[in-house]
Length: 139
Figure: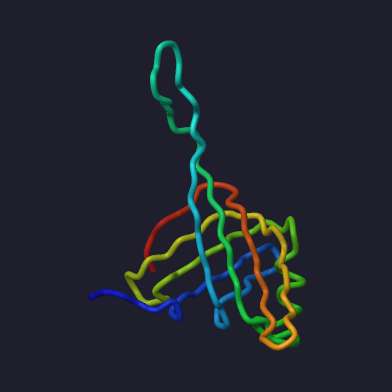
């Protein structure tokens, strides 16, 4: 079997002001590719017909929020993960070992949102909108 745990995930967010390691206290990360469909139905077609348009995608990251200015801290997210900030999102689901998969894409951060439950851990969620071509490769 070749299963692996999500704990190996490494996610980085690189902007003109530097690179922030988002992973370490992650709860989840997801990438959702999509594509526009162009309706090509006409005439006496009994069923819809489509042709593919341009590709798109989005990613979402959730982690436990740490206090202070260290990695995973409130300061990191409030400075680097503000809405509208552009950069490069990179994720390595199986870690950084040689030959393991690595993905990256130019993206726009949609802004960090925080959850402060009364009797549970504080979390941060950061959605990203793909802003160009995704690159699939290996370490």
